[in-house]
Length: 352
Image (tube, rainbow, N blue to C red; front, top):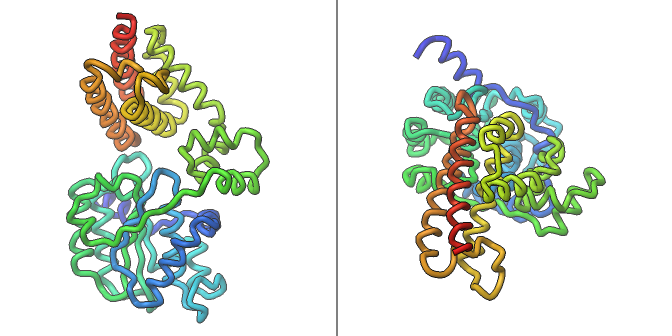
């Protein structure tokens, strides 16, 4: 590894973006039971050295991890984040020397082994401030096998008062050797009315219901979609799917457009759309809900459902790989061709 690579890995571990807006999100009412559980674990001396926060995209894993880091780093006497002590000030400014936030570096698609090694070296040293040392790895599934293996030693032999918080929406992509050394905690989503009330309190918009549906019920993600101007994305994507089913789509042109505008949101939409269709087809009968890919039921339906799940796996893998130098247009072209073929065969079967 070159000196430049080492310096870059060091920067990616020590550089912390503004955390105040995310800490505010972590105070959402529906996360109160999770916050209470974490506080009880800390108060009873049961805070694990490895913690795995699991939820769907936008549920608040990173927000909760930051909230916990702020609580553990605070040196106030109240037992929680006081917001007034020097450690709280350093954390809010993104300069606390005992906190690290590992994320995918700009222009990359994975959390590199070099970043994990820098973190492990920091964790092996004494605390700069004489208190706890915390690292948030977000998203944890962005690590590759080399990164996971480098992390294992820190998990297996943790120094006193050191904590690793892994935030993920894809727990199945984290090796069992890592999962087994962490305490798993689910990050819940609120009910629809609660989510809409939270969103409406931030900004009055008539399209919050559609944005929340687009975000699969995750209000934090819905807020990000609104900020990105994606209110019409669901309608646009459904029209594109209908066009692909009729073989009337310009797949190359569409792939180019998708690669240039909100590719991550579109990949998540495709994954959620197909997962929902497959689930509905598997649970429904010919007598109800027969507008949901009806050709997946009946003779030969099991084969097509298996084909659909293979396509779903491809979509999930594409979402994991998206970013960095990956050619997003080619990725979308491949997915659109597969979706068109999948739907075209079904259309032919319905006509027969």
